[in-house]
Amino acid sequence: MPDKNLPLKCKDHLVSGEEFRLEMRNDFEILETLPKPKNLSAYYESEDYISHTDSKKSITDKVYRAVKKYMLSEKLKWILQVSNGNKILDIGAGTGDFLEAAKEKKFEVSGIEPNDHARKLAFQKGIELQKELAYFDDISFNVITMWHVLEHVPDLEFQLKELHRLLTPNGVVVIAVPNFKSFDANYYKEFWAAYDVPRHLWHFSQNGISELFKNYNFQKLQTKPLVFDSFYVSLLSEKHKTGKGNFIKAFNIGLNSNLKAKTTSEYSSLVYFFQKS
Image 1: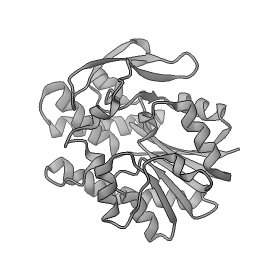
Image 2: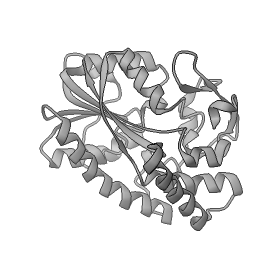
Image 3: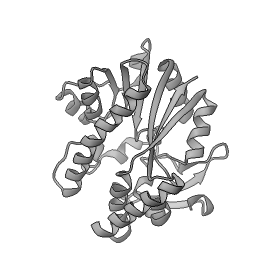
Image 4: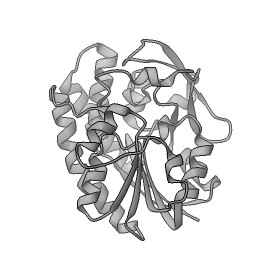
């Protein structure tokens, strides 16, 4: 496992080819990407960065979109079970697909997305996104979502304080992040695509993220697995490791990861529901 072989050195396979190391934080069971780039935005400048596009060119893109559509429905079902109101903020909203689906379910939607191109694509869907959290200084939300976003934020402490500030009493924050203790993470090691350095600045275990949020006055309500993530991540990891897309091998690793997680609960990615306390 990564925590037994630190620092783990990983390569940026998307943009720069540079090498970064992962080190354990002293206070929580969380890995940190070092060194932190001074101009982080430059590492997102790729047509292959899928959350900032609506690309449907490759087979991988098409599979990603099909699974995403199904999971939007599942995510909203989960949120309806824990929400005490209909005001929702999505941080890192990408091209606005989640908020578009939430709007159809009668949620009052707001979103944050720093990327200009992604915001324009969202606007074409009728979703107006803001660039910064400061826009919402005097507004509170019943639900705040961060779908694979927390791992990208430069300042974790500031982010958690902002989440607490922006939530109504008993409001819920929904956090989806990769799990570096999953079987596929252990199998691919430095080639595991969900490390995605340096865009992913933080890497979480279940214990690490739970203790982190507890430290900032949040109570964990429940955890849900994202079972499709192991297949997608394994497919990308195979390409990092071998230079080929090896679909069958990736499928087997992804399936094995989910089967083992039925016993260990260490799924490739997990969604955490934390209530403000």
